[in-house]
Amino acid sequence: MIRYAILTSGSCGNSYAFCDGKSSLLVDDGLTFSGLVRRLEQVGIPFQSITDVLVTHMHPDHSKGLGVLQRRLGVRIHASRQSFESDRKLYYRLGLTDEMVSLFDFGSSVSCEGFTAFPFRTSHDSAGSAGYRITSPDTTFFLMTDTGLYSEESLLQARQSDVLFLESNYDETMLMQGRYPYFLKQRILGERGHLSNRQARDFLEQSGKIACPVYLVHLSENNNSPEKVKEVYSSAEYDNIVICERGKTYGGYDV
Image 1 (cartoon, rainbow, N blue to C red):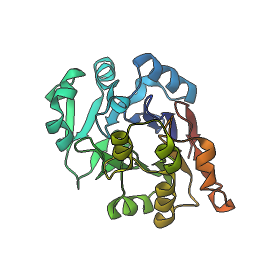
Image 2: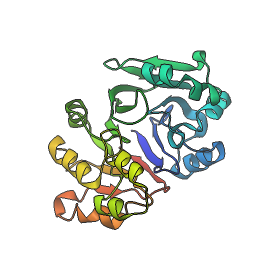
Image 3: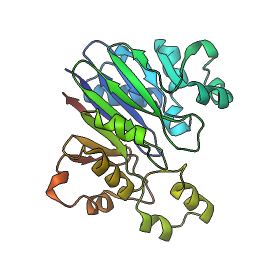
Image 4: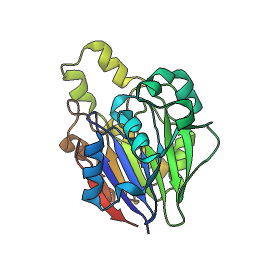
């Protein structure tokens, strides 16, 4: 049995947890140390069980807690080689030296305690950004967030998964009518930005995973709302979708 949780998602911080009863894996740690411990307690995952962290990319809302967590528990930090080599100063700023980070190349797998991860490229303005398919003897998870577009590879990884975590960042109309400056709107809309609500729905339909448990994450505070997301998932076929509000914790779910 696997217990999993969305500890938090959105610009305020991002972290996802998976526990097989003995060891736990995180994807990203954009929380303070105390915030991470508190949220893990809420979902019934022991803090001391964390052995590995997979990094999607180095923006602070995904990475700011990595250094403290590594020093407290000695966890293995896994990141793409391109991310580390391009943003080495960001890793060092967190106190993560070369010896503390295990690097992977796309096309290879990542071994963690109780889990195996298969990274794939995402399209974001952070070098070497990654999504993951995470396998265990019981369940396979798919996680893709912070990407301006999706690829055939990401669709293939989703089709092999049982539970999906997918970015649904913005509503196009809210973004274009909002107060963000033009350059920022173009960044979000661009190929290295984020997925809109409609792009996320298109991904789910193309992947054929609509009937699976799906968690829509990383909703923008200013350019989206749960109500706007619901507008593109109005039919009964989307009953398995959970819209994860910004900053809230969802878990622990057992599969």
